[in-house]
Length: 119
Image 1 (cartoon, one colour):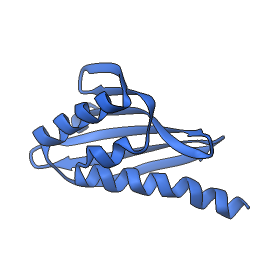
Image 2: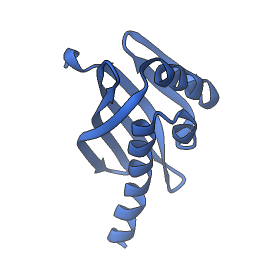
Image 3: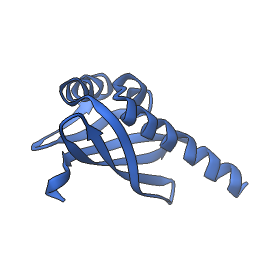
């Protein structure tokens, strides 16, 4: 049973990582909670699922991701987080993604994106 839980938690993480690498806001939106707190550079707000997808799509169009590499990840008490580096054409960003268990599935509740030089 523990192996099944680990596998279930790993699936959303892999989808999140692949979607960031591809700059695919629509794929990320499938994993959003009904509201998502998003901080991009110095702007922070809580968005409904559809609005959050538009905000991320705008970011991806501006910066055009080329890769996403995970620096750290952890699963604990039905919550998980991923910290990684998003490499774009001209910039690198530190990305923190928090997921929470909701009805036996993990949903993204928070995303933070900052310039890599800021951490």
